[in-house]
Length: 157
Figure 1 (tube, helix red, strand yellow):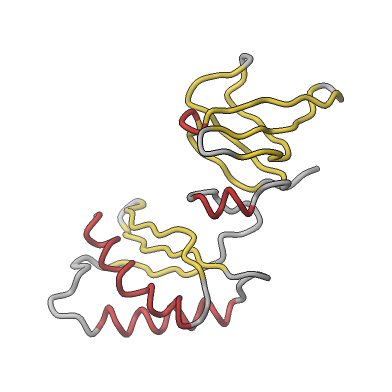
Figure 2 (cartoon, helix red, strand yellow):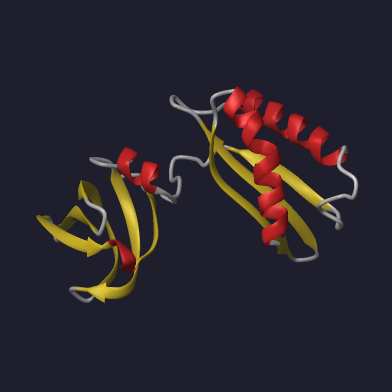
């Protein structure tokens, strides 16, 4: 699977760079009996359906033209926006999320909680500070970055 991911990444990056798009995530996985190749792309101001279709068409052409086929099994290609709750995967994602509302899942509990939602207030190489509400009171928690299982933007209600 990792060779498929790396091959697709190599093929799609020139397409994305030429159009000033960003690769947010790339997945190749089996769900039930079907395989899915999913690309999540974005750009400042958001990505639209026509831009996703363009990347899908150009990537399909490149994949179809390869011999031998880098993906031997049948698969569905999906190119889409990461959505409002986009995952925070790399340093740029975290930097862009400062002062935004995020959801963080932890490997180990801090103050008896393994999930926090709040505003990302500070970010360093080793930790982040999240400001959140607990029973109507503002609190903050410092989370070591190596304790973060998953992080994503979240919608504040």
